[in-house]
Image (cartoon, rainbow, N blue to C red; front, side, top):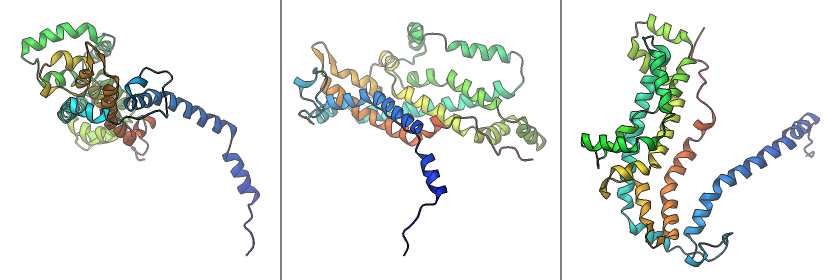
Length: 289
């Protein structure tokens, strides 16, 4: 058998594949990834450190590891109940946010009605209002309506997202008009055009809105902490404040709890991260000649 030879074309292709610019980009990507992972890695290390090593800087990477903080942190609070509450609240928020964003975005983009521009401008103006300014009036409203210390008060205020409405509206604006003209010629009404034509094409931005709403609900602390009193309806983030006390902060227990409550969000992101990267504006193949 003759030894395998590399043709000049293949060799040239190999040389083109390995470029200094590509190596530099990958190196920068690794550095940026480590910078973003550093807080999480530090939390994991503190959760495994001995109490005497918690305040040491820089932390000992290969110091003594103490795994007893995890069962202690797990036993400190009913985390399964917190997990169930958080998933239920986040699921309801995601479902309502997708529905309202889809319908409002479709209306602002494709439906003609009086005052459409003014209403859309008012929706965008909501993004400029600091949420902390609204805490006191919202608390009074919740007390008046009897929603305080319920699941509803943790769901209804986030049933609509200005970001979701804006994103869906921008997506629908880019859709070819021929799609809806053809649907109208076939006798489709507004609702059928929305759910049979627009919604299937809008899956990427819908998933992006869902992920944004889910993470916002999962990480919410101030609102459920102020609006709830019973432990059986509180979410995970409120449970983490258990480790803050008058005598100081239990950093080992807190970081251990942060670690096992953050893992579900990381897993979800890893499975759906491509929707953050690919964008939401591709509708190639939606129109046939």
